[in-house]
Image 1 (cartoon, rainbow, N blue to C red):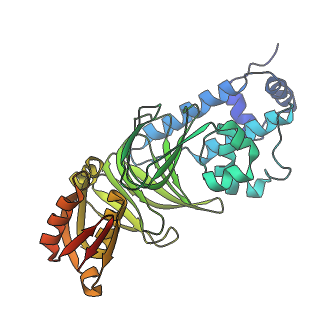
Image 2: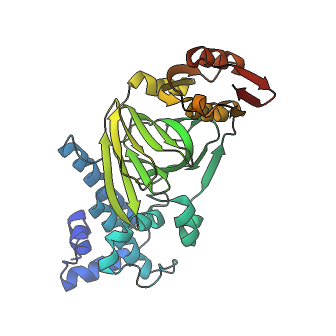
Length: 343
């Protein structure tokens, strides 16, 4: 009588603990079409169980589950005519190091960095059906993804995302700044990739500031967010943030700094509310340049370095915003087309 294929036998196989007879049964099973279903079921059950077991569990798929998925697909591919991964890529000593890359190839969206992983792996590029949405300076936008997640995009920002979230992970890429209101799905973590920084949640709302050349920042309004840094396949946990907490990095490879932030200020950003606390006129003017598609010239270095605290709105005419800012910061200005001169 043929031994049934169940999840326990599959686990045993992935741990290299099968007897010779069990190994033959598994190999025959791998050769049949549609054999990914039982593994997908196993991963979904295990990841959900991990989340239920501890309230402070990390908000990510366990690395063991990613390892199982990768090993399963690699062995299945070896029995078919599907494209193979480069020989030597799955060496045991290097396997966990490349787990993030492997999950991209196998899951279709997985954990990935678009600019590097897709260029190196043509298979991933073929499997991913991606869309790109870009705002220009002076423009905000709201994007609703297929899972119900709403992304409020700031000016001069780019979001790359799949047409459909079909697999174990919902993955997007962001350049610029955006507020994410993520649809809750404990079985399908949501990941935002920004160069080598990975922000991961199950269902929450938070803001990510990933403007090129500016400090990276994650601010949490609701739920729980995990922020990791990925370098050469190695994951470094930077922080697990809860409502009213924020993480900042001067550069993506700098030391992370955690601090408090007002939830109302974080949530207010999606409605064009800009809160500046102890920031210089130079820093504020740079934000307004993006919001209004203008250019500031500050004549006095002393005035540029002046520190103020002010709340502005970038959905009202520029002259009204400048009137509020100049009253609080005590400066005079001129508007010459798209050029703003601060005296």
